[in-house]
Picture 1 (cartoon, rainbow, N blue to C red):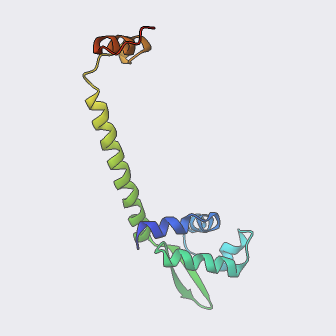
Picture 2: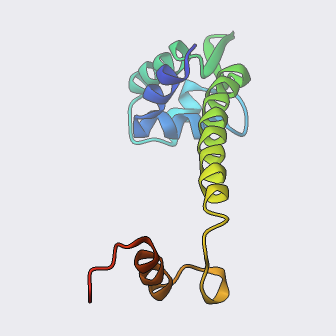
Picture 3: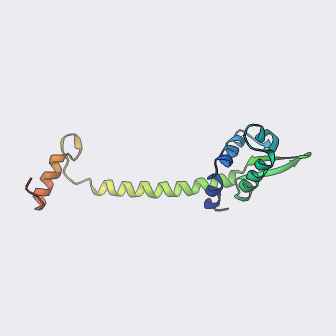
Length: 128
């Protein structure tokens, strides 16, 4: 499973709700359908998409099928977000550290006057 398939599957509001209903533990299609404004066959179709995306598993239990969240599928999707946030935070840290030697105004922030003074020092004054 790849994260993009999982994200696409969870892009549907009903599938997200089904996924959330499975969080506390495994449930049969009928149990899920009772809590949603869609038919049992529609819930089954949504569960099929979630299963194909690797987010849920199913097992027979008598005459019904019981669905549960697939931990590995969730872990793969979470790993994607972890990588994305790590890269974003690293870039933010690098940008913040590269500005660390610039002059700051009162309270450590670059104020309007500090920017104007910096422009004058750099020869970029517009003569306001």
